[in-house]
Image 1 (cartoon, rainbow, N blue to C red):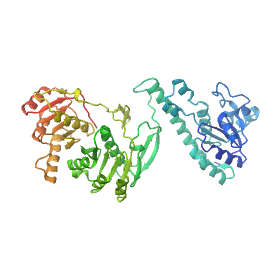
Image 2: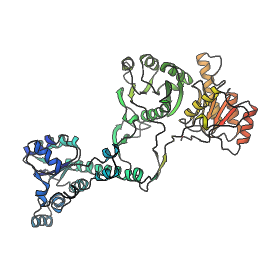
Image 3: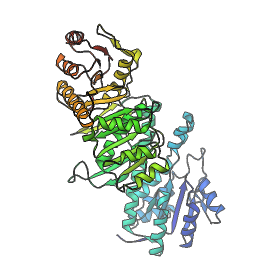
Image 4: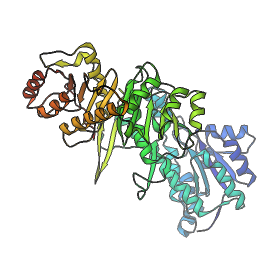
Length: 529
């Protein structure tokens, strides 16, 4: 394919950034500029000669601008195959001139929705002529250059400068691919708005999810797997994907996955006391609240100091120097926080590989949304687990009711268990996790593993007894048999929080009564696979 010299350009943009510079560069190469409405006005104000689209088509813009570029003169000039004799004859017969370059960006539909506009205004910001021109130009990229992103203006100018006003086939092909991605994203946003906001559908017949490449990753979960990170085209939640990386080497696939898990849990405490979450392989291995951030970190670390090595840390308060000093005493992969003071940044700067992510606001744990997971031949989609339990929702099922402190520990342990892979068991005491058992095939083993970790922590730090003594224990789903509950009682737990709903509830309750445990049912489970 040959280079194509640009002799006529059609410009119609909502985003006017860089427009005057582009127009001047095109004029310098002797390109005839054809434009519409506000774009033509902006070009004239920049001192450039512009032909109105109505001069080209012989028809005025009409119907409040809805009909201006939807015309055979425009689309014939875009779609005609230049070396097809029949096409050329049709152009000559009907006075259709070739259009060699189209510069279009579309009506600000997403921005209009985001500002809370009324439905009629939203509908008016659905672009029709723009996507039509984009698709026509992109289809005929053998002869036509299509540019949809102001960020590409500089590259277009450089291409034309290097080729005496022409563009290469490779450049046009690249622009065409980007153009179709732009219209696909635009249509996906419109389809999503109609389905969710306008029609109130939970699961539309077609789920359109516009995503943009945020970064290519070194590899996936393992070095032999390739990977990339995609973010929503228009993020509605500030999360790990929108965090500012202050320092450290490139984030990996596992870093991003684990940091998201840590953020999801620490966000549960965004309005609570200083809280620290330590995550390893997407599971929390230590969670604690405290009077200060460093106190919370110390307690979270002591829950499982072995797993904390090489872990991911998330906090719900701006980081300070003393906490940063404590964190850097061992190897840590990623630290995520709303912010960090100068002292904390100075401490982390000494650890060049440690990634520091600053989030600004933490996401709302109660927010709605969809979660997606690929399986062979399909996609599983569900509403995100934003379920929340308060003390008023609990049902006491044992002879003994929990004390005020036991109740607090139950709710804390329950919140943590929500973010632990099932089968999940969490022991907690005084706002600190005492032991966490995750991802086992049965609940009894999770109970025993969590108790074992608590015993190891007591031995490591020289405590008189494990923190499981007098703790509350949370189970993400019901105890199908008394064995898991009895394992928790053997570890010293005095209170239990679980969903209930097993066919053996009566047997489990009787076992709790016999062991002197206080037990409450939530009526809600938190499987996490």
